[in-house]
Each structure stands twice: as structure tokens, then as C-alpha cells.
Amino acid sequence: MFVFVCAGCAAELAAPLSQVALPAHAHQKYGNGIQLPALMEPGTFAVEPEPWGAPWRRWEGTDPDEVAARGVQAPVHALSDGAPGAIVIASGDTRGAVLIPEKRGGACCGLDGSVATIGCCIGGALVMRTATAHPDQVAAVAGFHPGFLVTDAPDSPHRLIPELTAEVHLGLSENDMPSEAITELNRALDAAGVRHATEIYPGTVHGFTLTRHP
Image (cartoon, rainbow, N blue to C red; front, side, top):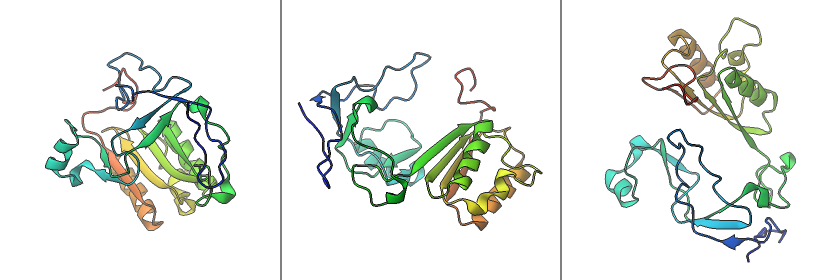
């Protein structure tokens, strides 16, 4: 049995765990219509032999020989340049790890107090509002087929962007937003100095994160 502890203060960060092999579906996101099982069973941990985590490189910036050597057979959104050997456990087995916003960037015990928010459809607008309302706690925002990001309202999310400190990734279908609205949104993000990416996924319609949509 293994117990993981904080390297800084020796606080126990997990229940006693037994090591198992990394499940075969560890890198699978979709189950071809079948719900994927939980990655890790309670009481177990596995070691990720491949690089994982930040920093990431977009697929366009990778070398074909390197990709082949790492066994990646098809294009992916990004390739990790992180260190191999990440420990994977079930979330219910964590112990003693809490969010401490005032220690963000310098906390021990593995968590730095920052959070990421993800929203689909109107949720895209809601997570943007959350990030602008709590710039000291939200580090990243992702919105997929988002709606109501650019409106005529005085408190439209795009007008709140000067308060934003989080990185932003927006994934749009071909019919989510008029081109003029996308331009206005990107202009506001650029003006505020926000690190961001706005992508339009060809061949998709609004709601593409749902299994019934392409």
C-alpha cells in the first residue's frame, strides 16, 4: 500500500492505495455511444508513463517523427510537453487538499487555489461572467457553442472583459455567432491583453457537445 504526502509539509494527500496498471481507456474521451467507466477504482492508483499536463503544444507545431515515436496515430488538439510519471487516482481518495485562494501560486499540497470554468450554450456566457466577477480565483475559461457573449446589453459579457484575467478558449460551431460578433469579441479580448483562442469547428452545428449532434 502507498500513501502520497506533500513534499513541502508531509501532509497526507490520499488514502492508502494499491498500484495497478493504467486502464486501457485512460486516453479515450468518447465511448462510441457507450458511457466510459470510471478511470480509477477507489483504493487504487496508476502511473501515467507518457508526458502529461502543461506545457502544451498545438498539433500544428508538432514534428511528425516525434509524434510517431510517441505512438500518436491521429491528430489531437494539443500534445503535452509535460513530465511523464503523473500519478492518477480516484477523486474520492484525495485527502487534505483544499482550495486556498490567498495562497494561489505558492500553496503546497498540490492545489494553488485557482479554478477553471467550462460552459456550453448559455453556460459560455455564465462562465465568462464568473471569471470577470472573480478574477483572483478563475484562471481559465472554456466555452463550447457559447451563446449571448456579445449583446446590446450594458452588461454583455464582452463589455466585462477588461476585468478578465483568465485565459479563454472558445470553440464555436459554424452557426453559433455572426462573424461581426466574433470580431468584436476577439477585439475586446485583444484590447484587454487576455490570452485567448477562438476556433470555429467545420461541419458542426450548435450543440455539438451533445451526442445527438455532429
